[in-house]
Image (cartoon, rainbow over all chains, first blue to last red; front, top):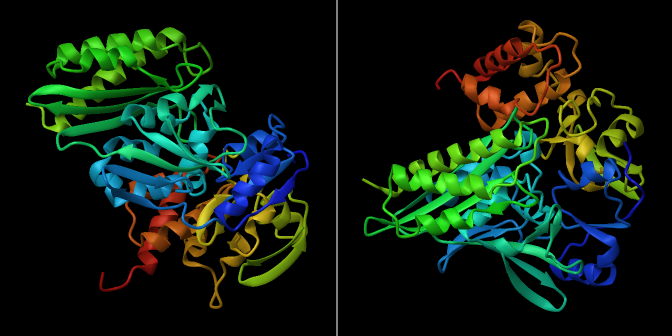
Length: 289
Length: 157
């Protein structure tokens, strides 16, 4: 399948890329890993007049924790994310999700920035960033701004990134000493989108739950932040009762639809189970008694 | 657009439209038909080639993106002294039935052994989890990659 014709630019520097976006943004798409964009272009669901290939821009593929934040360059490939020592040691939610994205070959090209900018409600990393309270940095010739993960997706495949902006970095707050997290994903087979998945993050403070973060995949028009469940957990005593209440509230917040992967009722049930299970695992990791 | 890239060790220059997929550039411009087109939707992995040694799906990448890069297809696996150990093992252990997924399976197996010379059964299964064998001949594919690992393992491991 051939996509519709397009002009192709391959800037070597960030400045060049931003200049191209300033000139052509409305008619252009940014090409990063291409693992979502190219299939859409082949099916002609997308037919941008111009592609701005950012793969050769240096300095966008770092992973570094400093000053209370983990900074992930937008061009970090999913397999690099999965292999990162700092992520394996300190960010278990990301570490659990990264190796479950699509399949290992797609993960060699797919990028974290591309995944988040794509705003697919079935995307795994969108939920992870919601749970972790992360934000993304976008740049244009006019400067830079930060968008909270919760404000990133405006609808299915619609992000709040303006046509002249480029997502350059993801910022994840460093976790406290007593914290844990995980990502639980139900999929029919490797490479399929999630039937349902739940990203979980939790901190403990003086024996109680401090902050809880819950992001849900494939059960709404965007990745969903389970606000009511998070609020119920905050300050509660860790344990089965708290997990059950959070699972119930998260399932209530989910808006799944019936499709080939399962019925809406089934998916809502899985949200309940995964949120309870994920919270229990995260609390154990955080050192709950 | 003119691009120059290294394919199986040889420098190639071709003139292609930006929308031409890498798999078409390889098969139709270079005549290397060992790289197969299966699903054409990024699901089956039959079109896998190595880009700088890493498996990628050549149906989900534009040819122009390979400009200046190094690509290896199944035709580039042979060594001066004969078959690549993975090729020899697929032959010996019947790691193929119809053969359609085989070029990709062998490239993925070879790339795995490059970074992990002594993979477990599970490592191998994870590594080939992006490649579908429609004959469902997975058992022998796994065996073949295991055998290739054993045949190339240093004696003093």
